[in-house]
Image (cartoon, rainbow, N blue to C red; front, top):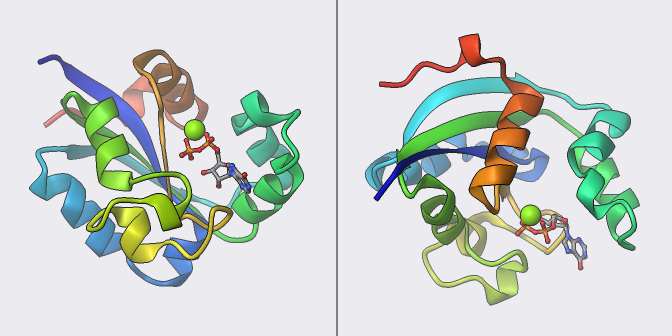
Length: 141
Ligand code: IDP
Ligand code: MG
């Protein structure tokens, strides 16, 4: 299994619920290390650039409004199979469909406000990490 890096974002709803520690605990207990962090309040324009892949979807406007509604915590997670493992820990996009014990099952209210973002492939992880972090900001354990 390869050591990978992936981008995780704790979204505004989970920041407002003050569950940052619980979410990071799940990553660490499952073998992922937080190797970079950045707390930032995106503008709607910046959120739109991050989610440009979804620009033609009907939920794009509300998604950008939500992601710029409050601060987020962007993180780089590192570990074996980090991309897939993070997606497993997150659970399905719609929390109603998320497996019990996943972050979204436990902390998300709706498909819009679903607590966390995670890169969906190694290629997208590299692009998304570089959106928030320079190489010099990331320190492996
Ligand atoms: P993901 O976050 O599980 O990777 P994506 O399909 O990449 O899901 O969608 C990005 C984000 O857009 C989701 O996390 C969610 O916040 C929002 N989203 C996706 N599909 C819908 C929808 O059908 N209605 C409203 N929001 C959606
Ligand atoms: Mg996605």
